Image (cartoon, rainbow, N blue to C red):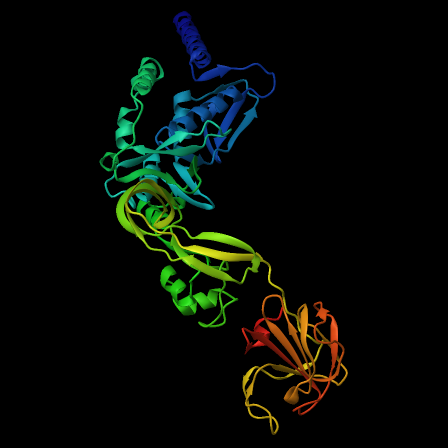
Amino acid sequence: MRLFTGYYKSLRIRALKIRMLAVIASIFFLPSFVPFEKLGNNMFAVILNGQEVGVVSDPGEADELVREARRQVASGSQELMLMESDLEVVGSEVLWGKIDEPGQIMERMTRVLTSAVKETLHRSYVVKINEYMVNLASREEVVSLLQAALDKYDSAGRYQVELHLDNTRELPVLTTRIQTREEAAEQTQEAIIMEAGIQAELTTVFEEAEPAGEKDFEDYDLGLISMEYGDTIEVVEAYLKEEELTGLDAAIREVTQDEEKNDLYEVISGDTLSEIAIKTNIPMERLIEMNDSLEDENSMIRVGEELIITVPEPKLAVVRQEEMYYEEDYEEEVIYVDNDDWYTTRRETLQEPSAGHRRVIALVTFENDKETDRDIIKEEVTYRAVPKIVERGTKIPPTYIKPIAGGRKSSGFGRRSRPTRGASTYHKGIDWATPTGTAVNASCGGTVAKAGWGSGYGYVVYINHPDGRQTRYGHLSKVLVSAGQTVSQGQKIALSGNTGVSTGPHLHFEILINGSQVDPLKYLN
């Protein structure tokens, strides 16, 4: 009995050992448990954005898994995504340990990264027009924006815009091409090849055999014949936040809506301020406010002078050409006959003009709504205009200077109160109060016509000038020239005084044109 009891006890111990060996063997042979050699850190905990997502036996595996997880998260959107991805691998040295399946680690990483997405950047297009920029969501919106600028002036919708890569640029930049819809439809690859080869030769043969004759009025395609943008346009791709994009409707309003911009208006012959205000559609008060040279509506303007005006213009200018037919009365340009013996101030009409009549085809160029050029390409005169013929002088006329240095203006030209008994109430010159003995100089070169006593003038000098004018210098104390003497401009001719009908030492100065006194201040340089 004892023999059997010892035997069974031995069997139980052996069975227990076998089971223990089986457990140990299963630990080492299961895929999630790995035996390690004692060579330093040999098992690594993977931490992503502060969360442990699994255990691997090789740090490189963690890098590969996080890259794949990022790719899977990003593949769920067509746009560029920004996400936080802070990977940390912590190693330890163990005899054996359990590692996680790659699929499980990937699943945990994907959840962590999805919650870490900060924002999505949309593939967008930046449109630059000169210094103005607007961001749009798609290439189609860019085309719609640019097309809207054309449609503003193309009511028939004949022209369309396309984007194409600018091969002259180092970086990828899109530019514009405008053509008619018919041209776009015909511009296939086959047509290009045909025109480059056989068709080009046939075209040359036909052109040589049938040279183009002069077009008749009916042969012209009146209306819009070309369009282009008047500003530089560049389009580039970019990845932008949603809030950085502009809606298409708002962008069209910004680009096509007129806004006031400063421009210059050159004064032409016959212009007045009121006419310029009407021409430019600017109130007179606003025109005066913008130009420092204008004090009020009576300010003088000169031919060639440039005035600042405001004009309504959109951000994107459109230049177009139109063929126009019209009939009009017209005038020939003035014909000038130069006379070298006359001064430039003298002109005489030799032939009066009369208007003619003609039929016209004109090529008119516009920038937005403003006409910038008009070229007559066909004309049929019903009856010819007669030109105006004008004879004009070429000699530069003499100039006039103030006859004394300094002096105080004591009496101007025109009506005044009688300063003393015997004096006139209409002053025919200008007076400068100055001490007796002040040098008096010739205002302009010429010939002395009178030098001596002149009744109310006291001592006086008259000088005749080459342009037919005369100057007079009165109330002198001493005369230094004589009649018939030639004097030059600025030459000393007398000393000022207080002779004749005078209320004190001064110089009286006159300029006469055709024998009549004029205001000297209008002619002095």
